[in-house]
Length: 178
Ligand code: XMP
Ligand code: MG
View 1: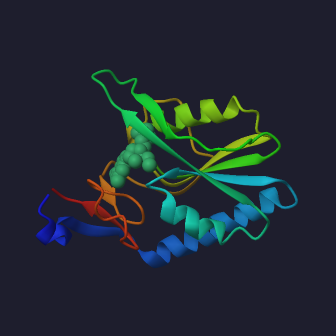
View 2: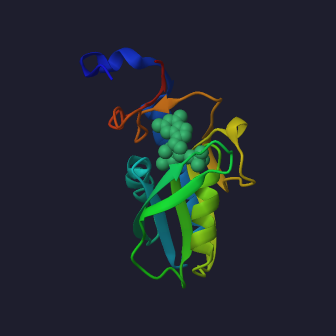
């Protein structure tokens, strides 16, 4: 990548900082209402969801705990994909209502694998909140419980999302153009 002209690849801003802030507040309110008075654990998938997690947990106005995991997805020739846990959460999740905080749901293969693993650990309940949903690309039979934004089939960067590890720090979501 030409790092001297890194911003030359931002073709247009799709979702502004203000739009993100407003939707994150709304999602925070929804989580607060649903889980008030119940043991709540937010589980986020690194690296992409770090910024979303930091913002949304501050909008959850009921006590919650936080955990991170890291996964890698390998897409072979077939459409089945293969998801590997790089860093697991190091704690018991039984006794908690678990909400997965994800950056983007694309084929759905990552969250299919992650929800299968977490469900096997007997949480009180398990839901998925994703910042972005790209339903056109779905392969796995899985839907988020809550998506803040539904987007068309574009490659997006910013607000935690990267292209070759660049652009995560942008406060907005943009379309990447090669
Ligand atoms: P699946 O396909 O398993 O994958 O739902 C989700 C993961 O794929 C990455 N991904 C993207 N990353 N811009 C990105 O920066 C995109 O448009 C995009 N689409 C998918 C991302 O890591 C996500 O967790
Ligand atoms: Mg990700």
